[in-house]
Image 1 (cartoon, rainbow, N blue to C red):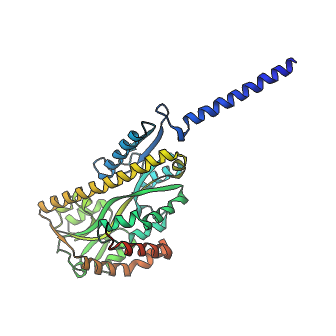
Image 2: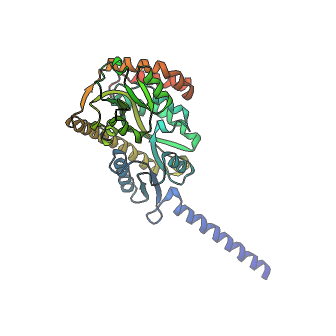
Image 3: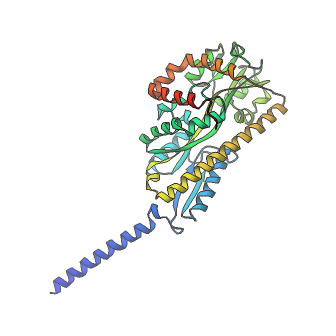
Length: 348
């Protein structure tokens, strides 16, 4: 009888421990975060704290923490604190951090399908780009993150790349012929050479000195990069060729997103949509301000007609489309081109 009583007591203790353990897991698990034990979202990126991208993430943090009543906390690590873009992608993939973002052009090594966004003259304007990225094509392209244990959140904006030089304004594709400019990857070099430019392979850090010393006549980049790098001090012309639109792809760890309750996932996604909207608006305001500052510094800014841009980028794409398709695949290329054309004249 004593042995039976001891055995019953042991079984009772084991059952109590298991019940208590399960109860604790339910209270502190990621789907049931509390103020005492919140769900943590760590976001790392390489932007400075002054950029529209970082400001948008700060807005995301404020919105998520407010809407969740403190059950979800957001920690932001800007300015490359957690390493390079490749580092933070790997950390997000492993789940060491929960989110990051990067230009899709920098993720092609891992996801070659994203090379489709490198087609020249893909979008007529920002509104056109937003419709495509927020629509079927943009959502479909984010599916390729799944193989890396990542989930796409949405696309923020870096903006259009334009052309600067010290010789003449660019109004037609013929104006590019003979100019010496900086090159940095095989697709870009081949495309500009198709217009008759002479390319020199240079790192970003070498560009200012090369422009200043007249080793090259021009270069291409976004308006924000042009002004922040002080290229206006060496360049007489800033022509708005808008030949490439560069986005920031915001992504998260797939396991983390799957672990969220329906309510918490809704809070995260709603806050991210608001942050993306705010980031695009802030990026647009910053670009307009920078254009005014560039003009005030003495650099001549000229619009390039859409027809001239189309003719220019057609020549460039004829030179590199096969190279892009070999990376992204014919099916991906055809799907995106169809959606781009469909959204070309659709009112926002």
